[in-house]
Image (cartoon, rainbow, N blue to C red; front, side):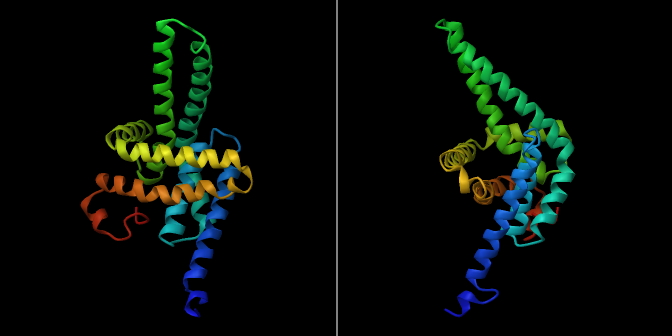
Length: 213
C-alpha cells in the first residue's frame, strides 16, 4: 500500500499523467478558438500527449507550444481548407437532400463520400504532420494513402472520434476539458503501429524512436 502512494508509485504517476492531459487539453481548446487552427492544435496535442504522457519525456506546456509553433503554417493551410470544405459540403448536402431525382441521390452519395474523406483527413493529417517532416502535398498524399491503406484501423479511429464527439456534445462540461487529449492518448496505440510501417529500420529498432525524430 505504501508503494502505491510513493513519489514514483502508481497513484502518483496516474495523477501526474491525468494532470498533464488536462493541461494539454486546455492548451488545445485555447489554440483551437480560431477554428482554422484546429489542424495545428490537433497536431500539437497529439505530439505533446504521446511525448509527455505516454513516454513521459519532456514538459507538457513546452512541448505543446513548440509543436504548435513548428507546424502552424502547414496546419493553417490544411485547417482552412477543411473548414471551408466542411461548410461547402454542408450547404451542398442540404441542397441535394431536397431533390427527389436520381441525380440528387447520386450527388448526395458523392458528397457524403467527400465528407467522410474530409473527416479522415482531420484524423490523419494532424498526426502525420506531427510525425513526418514533409512538404504539404506530400503530407496530404501520405494521409490519404494511410486513410485507405489501413482501412480497419481507419474505421476504428472513426468510431473513437465520433464517440468522443458525442460524449462532448452530451456533457460539454467537464468532458470538453479532458476527452480530446484522452482520445489521442488511446488512439496513439493504433496510429503509432501504422507509422512504424513508414519508418526506417534504425528508427524502428530504437526504443525511443518517437521523440528521437
